[in-house]
Length: 533
Image (tube, rainbow, N blue to C red; front, side, top):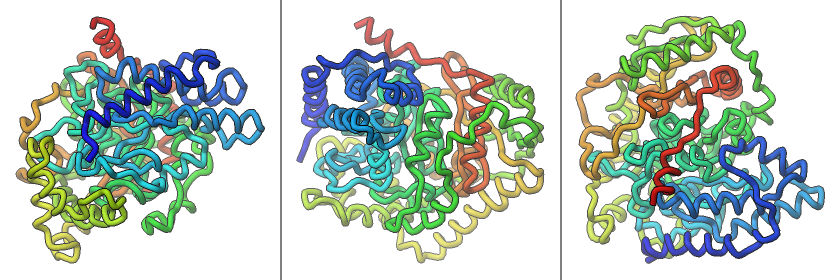
């Protein structure tokens, strides 16, 4: 079995390779805060090369990842991928605007040639022979897979006691304050985008795992309509709610990524309507005038909304008004805390969905069921240090034909969607909803020291406010986070939520707000910490 030092050894080897291969002929390129769209334009204009850009990101990972724990692995062939992209451009055969763009991808998404661990030692031999569908689409667009981003182990659904990061990737740190959480489970992807460790990143989201890291790391992130992007080849939590999503430093960059990622896939039957509902190019609908004359619903009081965060949200609302939007207040009592329903759905789903993923894993992977993973965790030296009450609760379920699951899933989807967000949009005649995404990052708690904080923790129903991202996940509706300002030096965002397949509309609204507000400011704390060493 591959152990942690070897995983980091692979990282070090890749960095060493980068420092002595091809870079001597590549003119340096300044990637810090460089928009993906600008890198794309510079590549198209011949102002730089993919090798130069990729080398620059590898150098930044080498310099800063030790402080951040954002990246688990740099692809050993990253520079070869970049050189191939440069050759295509030289030959007049560029694959499109993403050709040669270096991207980090969350370590629960299969990419051929790179191990997919899900943050667990149980899968350190999980070297997929084929790309996941989302990776296949990105590869077809010419993306350079720079490496794998850290993640909360099993996308966060192992223990309700609190486990920051993973046994494989370590504890990730927020680049605005290294003592604060980068949120999960797409923590590494969020950090990487914020700290310019890649041009953009790919995360996955079950209950807010793209949205929460985007919120606290000061970036743009989109959780699309469920199954606009195929889930095939991604370590699952819940087929009811899972999706991947793009994460970047601007709405334009996220739109460029989504254009390549979206589409139907026979291997994910739920995605059958994606081709009919996707945009060929989501950047085409972006306009600074997109909010003019549009009616939006404003929700106050969801999770994260407080006296501390209210001024940031109020300022964001004023920007929307100034851009010509008509705003309508939506009463909070239209919504309810659905965390307990969400818990039931996830623990039922993961047992069957995990087995479906593991059955196709390489022969070197011994675990084939959730029960196998539970037994592995009891004895492996790193894994046995952590509890696994959510795994154990999932293993005790009896299958998705159980009336409890059927009733709960039906109620949650309806109450979150048709009778929740959908009802609010219909009854108030609004084209999207706007709410504070969440509060600022909290101090990282010790592992096993955050009982009750997990979205799937057992608690009294209604004991906390509804979750904006959790409600969107249950409904299957799209959710876009855009930076909105700072609270005590830490970023927070606002969310634009719409009906299924309304990604183009949400991106347009988000772009108009972003361009008018200019609230994103890059992090500095991680650089100061490294410089001080």
